[in-house]
Length: 409
Figure 1 (cartoon, one colour):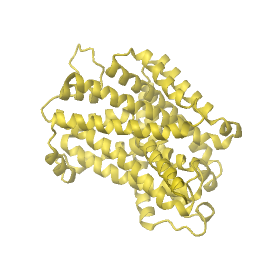
Figure 2 (tube, rainbow, N blue to C red):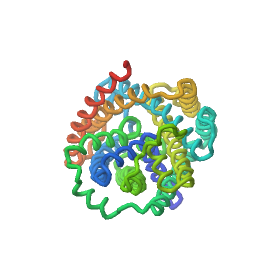
Figure 3 (cartoon, rainbow, N blue to C red):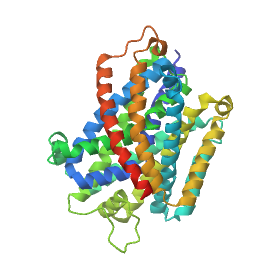
Figure 4 (cartoon, one colour):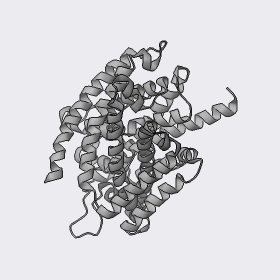
């Protein structure tokens, strides 16, 4: 392999990792982290650690099976049980569409906090910026570079706020391993973070990007593994930094809810940055939210279409047009509805159901020679830990179904 090819492959591996990570780091990720940090304070460190270990198990299993087989998630599922791939593709695409509506709204909120832009105009700008990327022939290469840059911006900006608010790092470290809130109380939060970090389309975003770049089969399993762990690592760094930034605010006794009568939107993370670092902190958060939202729009649209394109040759041939249409529909629905709260409840329930189904399918596939090949042996420890995570994720899925009742209240 030439040095030029190695460099190109490295760029794709890093790009796939950032695509997965920034797909996970959406507006919901930021709000979720802020809310749980306010609730559990320093003990939330344990939640991050536990969910990180579980997420690594998910990513290692899914990326390896997809990479070694050279098949996308839906095609793996159809090999295991004919028709299952269509069901998974439908669930992933539907969940991706609904979450993308929220991502458009989150990007608009970021533009509002950063520049004071009207929210409705922000919806259109958010959708237009994401669509612009896929008008270029080399859209995938642009996505690889864009998610790296915006991911790095998020990390740097949050790190600056950490230096401003000076969180109790020692306390956070201690409670990461010995939480004062108690392990039982933290369990639901661990499951919630797991679904939010590797649920639905997120698990497959980076793995499908590697397939599109031709990086697959057993001989590339080392590179595939590195990229998957890197993706989780990037998401974990942002989660940890955001946790520390918000912890530095809430340990002072401050709440993350704007006072009654305030014109500020109900956004716990934004209000934390405002209280911790003043007006400049609020603008900083706007930049973080914008970066998180726009990269999540790209990740959700790209991955959702990647689940559908193998079922239709026309769709596969016109992938960029399909992605543009996906983003346009998300933007239009957000502009019409304004606040898609009920749809987001449905999306949360779908994500809770998708993870055990997709991971379980990949675990079965890892033992099938007609999928992974005659000479591939899936690590036993990875399989056992994967089964444990499937059971935990199934529990989350059943729990999330209760939220469906809220749709009809």
